[in-house]
Image (cartoon, rainbow, N blue to C red; front, side):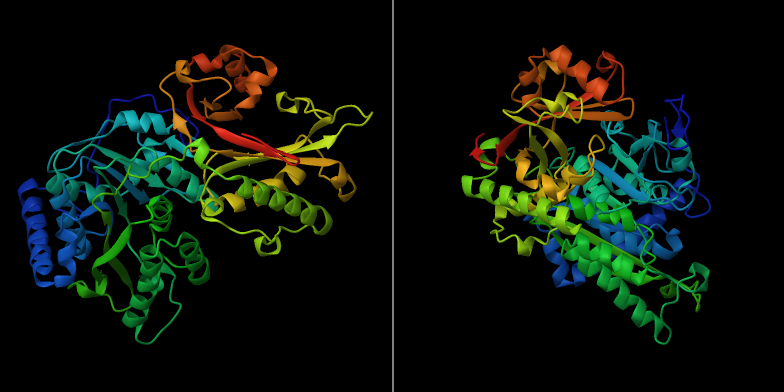
Length: 524
């Protein structure tokens, strides 16, 4: 089902070059000549600027570029700076992200087509990766959105001309509700990145003037617009996702590709660095409009050549936490539950009295589970997760399977969620606190398995994706109930609201490992 609520039946169609002849030249020879002119000018500028020479060095790997998507007469000369650099690196695949200008939606729109047309030759889509992405929440196929949108198409001739017949993964990013969605999408995409991939973000920057209903200042407008653009660039340069989101809220900025840029920030490796290759606005062209302007930035992101996409190794189970860090997290979770139950507020980590080690700051998935000392009362809920633990019954369980927040934040969030947001239970009261025991599970990053034969019961936690739904079991669930693999997968289907056995119909699975520790006893 696509973002318009209907299925796309045709899978063989080619997306036509809809904006050729209006936003850029339709004639192949004229277009090629225009692009060569832009690229030659960019190459001469690189040769004249010593601070850009490092960008050409083999000491660095190119990760991503941000480029504008206005008509080439306005922004083509700026885009050429980034594509000149990309042409020297010759990536093997391009992940192309841009905003939606014509249709409002949440999440990421994928194309069901196999080919995107350009006047310079077609570009094939990486269908395997795209088909895989459709199994995740917030990723759906939507041909109509892609047919109407120009932000991706304006990049295609540059890509075809400078990179050749490279496969692409085109994505239109809609509105994302919060930082959690941004990070989850970034983490999903990052798992598909390899050393020879390039991320291309299509975005103009500040749209100023009455045409765009944005004029927060007057007097020396060009200087103030540039100051605003450079403040946004500073967030990108510093890999400051929270600062970028705050900038957007504070300034109500009109960066059309704000959400694609945010997703890129959530993906960048720690060693990445940004360079502003070229800055310009529509005022710089002969088509000057004194009342309105749009800003164009060409930005590159690179890192030392020994690093890059795919260079960050996964975290092994035995590397997650030491005993002291486990104790600190239990203390943090207990304090978070107490503060919420008594004061109905979220704990400030500075009040918890724990040391935030690098391991506790590392983004990881985590679950917090509450158990209540058993009384003569009937069970509060009936669910596979309600397996008896000694003399306690389940009282709440909430978690993040994706590493979308630093571990200490994930524990605070899910401790509060377990005592107040588990739909199976009423919120925990202050009087129950002495009867509660807390348990924490910290997860290794998810890994996709090729088939169910790769799932090891007792070792792997399992995430099922099927028919737009998902469900998860922690590693201990199957063994505690004595289920076979088939029974476990049936139960995952039931938990997702599907019929038992539907996992056999094109379902996909991720696995993870975890360490589990509880108050009074720490164990792996």
